[in-house]
Image (cartoon, rainbow, N blue to C red; front, side, top):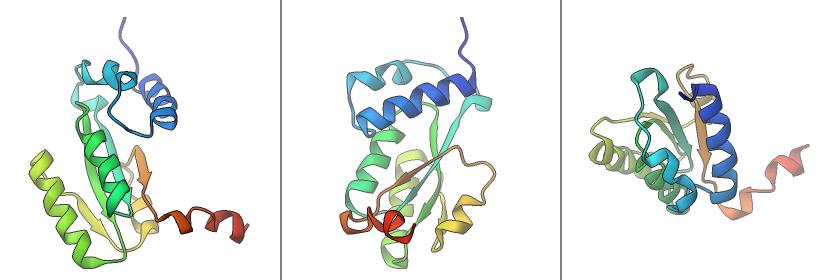
Length: 127
C-alpha cells in the first residue's frame, strides 16, 4: 500500500517531535523508503549554528529530504553553512536574513528552528 505525501508528513512530524531529528531507529522507516520527485520533502533551517545545523545534517541523511533554505542574522556563518549544505546535497539552498521571507517560500514543507536556548521563551514573552 502506498503512503500519501500528506500521511507521510503527518507521521514524520510526530516522529520528529519525539526524536528531534536525531539518528535513531524511529526514523529508519523513512530511510528505507523510495520517494518520487512529487514526494520530496523540502525543509529549511532558521538559526544555522550548533544544534540547529546538527539537526539539519541528520534530516538530510533521510532520502527524499532536501534543504531549500537557510536563515540566520550572521551573514558569514550563513554563507559557510550554505556551502556545507551544498557539499552534502549537491545543491545550494537559498539564504535569508529574515525568517519571514523564508516562510513565504511556497515550496517549503517543514522548518527546523535552531535558535539559542535563551530565545526559546520569546514567543511566550511576546504573547
